[in-house]
Length: 261
Image (cartoon, rainbow, N blue to C red):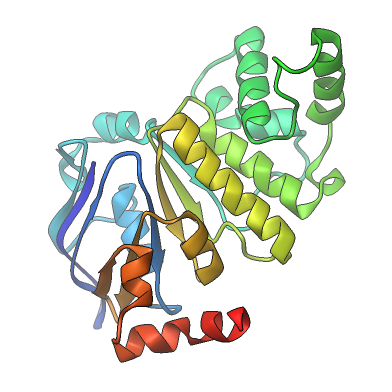
């Protein structure tokens, strides 16, 4: 479980987080929402140990992040996968090279293992057929074609799926998604939402999703946390969010309500 306790963070005179507390249960999907500049990215950086708090703490699986040494922090990060906004694939690398990059950087050179892990995660995000549904020959033929493609050969939705596949390497316990539907059309956005929900259920991973997309929130979230000016404005279920009478929440949700009509 991830628990944030009374987290404070300032940069010079600017206070970014002011007493933020949050519990993220294992195996659930939580969407963190809020206006631009409200502290969402700074909060996530604390969760993965990229920033140390001024006061308060983040605890992951019973370990206080900012008190870990580099070796223990590195070991804990092995339990985490990150899906970057815009996928952040390397243009000059193939699909295979992008997916196995983290394992290669960690010193794994067994090509049979790298190949097997790449096939597993690529199939899990729907870019390859289920190995149980096709012949070995057909599976290998499709994999041979896909593995050598570059990001420029892929659609936006396919690039996003490759980014998700890369985050699944090593079977992490926690997956962080940074604006996973940004820049995608509505149909592809819904497909990515369905993928996030499906992976959460099949793999029993804990998903932490930063998003402005309220359609995504109501499709995938078990819980919602809303930041406002560095403080926690709301915590609860999507249904509880819909029923809120808080003016700042209603203002944030107004665009979603208008589009829905």
